[in-house]
Length: 273
Image (tube, rainbow, N blue to C red):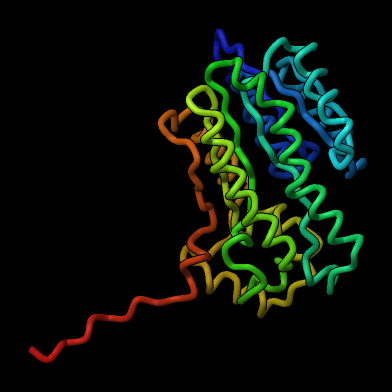
């Protein structure tokens, strides 16, 4: 339900479907006005427009290729002209070519991942930062992946390539730097995802290509024995936006315990004394 008196504005990148769309809709249902970007997945654009219209909350849908740096400052200016302010940035743009889908890197795939997963995030933040600072209580959430910790290893080696992993480690460094320069007016935090529906999990082409044995291996490596849901991600984002006013420069690892799951705690031995 929209909250009375809500004046904030959010810019949500990659909102045409999946995680980005769900976050955008959750914000709209709170009464937060939203600017929502998309570029590809054209077959999902119509349902995107319909679902946001049904919220009854003012919003703007913008098609933009965020790999083109010269388009980014005009994007933010367009949002300011429409809404007059910017309070929240959901930095949800990435391309991670799954090895199970793409195999070994080509130079084009490498360049695509760098341009979206890291470079676009950086320049969107750069353009949005003065407006977030002006709001006095700005919030940035950088969406990243546990690939930045585990790399191309274990069961996730079917899903994470080493370039994608390197870029996600870079996002953590950006998060810390931006938190320093943003404080105290802007909080910057990172939501690091494990295997989640529509993001490496169910609803992706790569998940459908995995054998049952590999899928079970992923679950066995995850302490909670399941993959994440879009709702898990939305709830974590809402917490970072409104439930964590004393948190900045931090990382929430939303992975069901995958990073910890490879090692077991053995019973204590009886000892010798």
